[in-house]
Length: 365
Image (cartoon, rainbow, N blue to C red; front, side, top):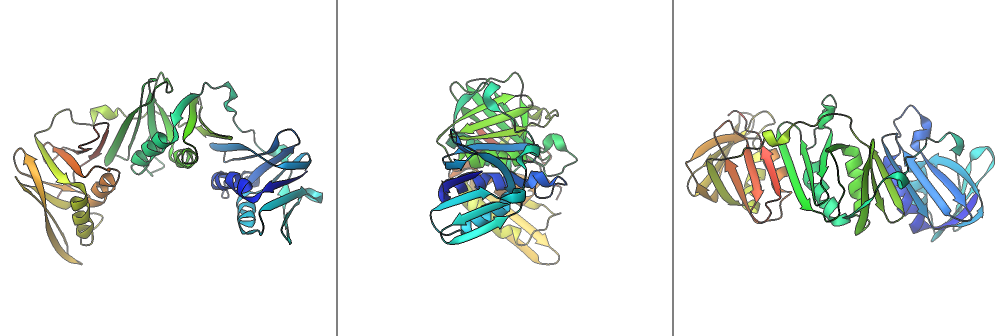
């Protein structure tokens, strides 16, 4: 095997391949990227950790057909640092990869391509168009609240629903929940929602960031995303997502409208005095929200933020980190905080976007 490829083109494929390849696996092959060169198709590359896979067809001039696998991160870092604009890679004896760029020559240990795992193919799936920008935004607004506790694997991903016109993403870690809906004409049609694992969503977001228009398909047990000449296949989590609609309050007794930036700034300063195990006190009054925190090892803080409260005053505790992270997903300057009693969750909605909401559970003061 021997091919010559533009450095920028090679890196375009290697960036996502090296982030998916599993360097911690007990299977050395999973740390590698598959390279296959054909005179008709150019260079095809692939990487997988058996749960998330990527394949791409890159433009290359092929001098000799063949295949090889090389450690993905090592090849990526080498090509990124290589001089010149073009890279030539040749398969040498004993599956070594000889890489030439400018006046530099490198040799990397490789492995035969015969034992590389099969990468899922999207050809049999029914693809539906979706905007890369919309997909990226929906991922951004839900990734932060995915549960990281691996024993609760049914919460280790984002729940995705779609009826062909409206698509929805939901995530929760038990302490907070985020939900976003977007109208997607001719979008995917699912009989039931699916759970896309967090690592897969991170890679999906990266790929969506590279193309204005993408195609998506769900064919169990995978979700596929196609962007230009790259295909991402993510193995779905086989579990039941909790009935999230039951957690979101249908009614509320109080609504406070507040400046998002003013509240974020105040909470960031309050966090300096708070601790992980102690909540911050939120005292809602007619025109003022007073946030206070005390830490025996650091001190106390009290700050006021202007609000407009519709309803009776209330004092309730929240984890400030969760509230700040929720507010960071909002672009509107004004947000509405819907409250019930001291034991009910708070619902945060941007005033300009009713299709997004965040929910934060209260803490004992």
